[in-house]
Amino acid sequence: MKVNALLKPIKLGKYELPNRTFMAPLTRCRADNEAKAATELMAEYYAQRASAGLIISEGSPVSPQAIGCINVPCIYSKKQIDGWKLVSEAVHKNNGRIFCQLWHPGRISHPDFLDGDIPVAPSAINPNDSVFTYEGFKETVTPRALTTAEIHNITLDFAKAAENAIKAGFDGVEIHAANGYLFHQFFTNCSNTRADEYGGSHENKARFFFETLSAIGSAIGFERVGVRLNPSFHSFFGIVIDRETIPTFEYVAKRMNGYSNLAYVHFTEPYMSVDSIPYAVKEIAKHFSTIYQGTMLINSGFRSESGNRVIIEGYADAVSFGKPYVSNPDLVERIARNAEWTLWDESTFYTTGPEGYTDYSKLTD
Ligand SMILES: Cc1cc2nc3c(=O)[nH]c(=O)nc-3n(C[C@H](O)[C@H](O)[C@H](O)COP(=O)(O)O)c2cc1C
Image (cartoon, rainbow, N blue to C red; front, top):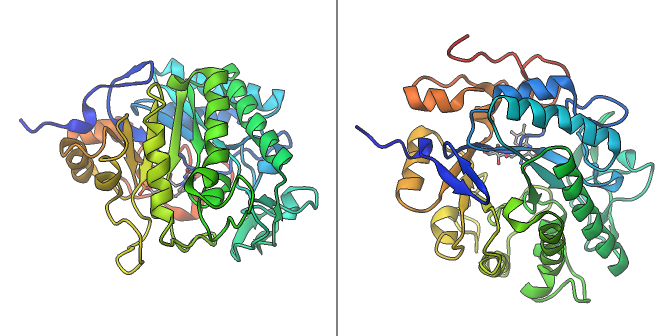
């Protein structure tokens, strides 16, 4: 019989998980209420997907300044903690586990979300992209460079949000340090030209991230903390890979070996072909598994066969699936039975209501 590595149990931090098929974070914009709190509908959606070894929630803004998209469920107020409680309880009732992805988009926001304030970033460099506002897509603006005191305050926001997540019943948190958002903006020269201790060397560019990782670990315990990185992310949100980019990520990955209790690091294969991009790494799992010694998750573009392969080859411990989880709430069962996967409908990724959200069927329906 063929070994189905995706279905083998795994220990992750303090948890024994029944399989290695994880749900990747997916922003779905269903928190369409004034409190920006998770809802009953969201609880139903996540509970439907509880057979995943681990669910990682959609990005949850850690403060009002960390909002960069419409209808995103946040994690800084009492009402928002109560909203997420609905979700964690529903997932646990179905014997699942769920981490909360903590998010600050930095310059990938808009004054529309910030009461007219300018978005913040390491440096005042416009990503020249667009963000999805309540009035449709709008062009990004030139952000304001953070002061040192503000950087420290954002670290505190993350630590507080991590505590809130635990209060809300989450099993842990994932720090969103990927995809061109605030931590990623600190990691790369194209967005970080600071001349202080937060810019320049690899150590400086990673300082804010490690200060935040330490603060969160002290607040809730490192065994409940995961980290998301996307080293070969390129050409989206104004991010451009240069000769220092990958070495900075290698520095970050290597240094995380010192956090031996960390639950996991979640790497992402390139979102697009980087064959012609100088300095990019084409095979992220293969490359970074030689550097990071702890539990490693890999994402992007995987299917049953490729997911099993990457684990069997020893390049990752678990695989997270994004779009497949939009349309296959019972992905684990489909992998077990070698059943067809339902295709996702992109037109309902960011809409409101149950359509294209909780109405995808399971094999048993
Ligand atoms: C609708 C949608 C929303 C997403 N939201 C998030 C998010 O909130 N946080 C995050 O880290 N990645 C987010 N991603 C990226 C996914 O986690 C994942 O990296 C991407 O879909 C590639 O994996 P896949 O091929 O398995 O879909 C999102 C992707 C999609 C399609």
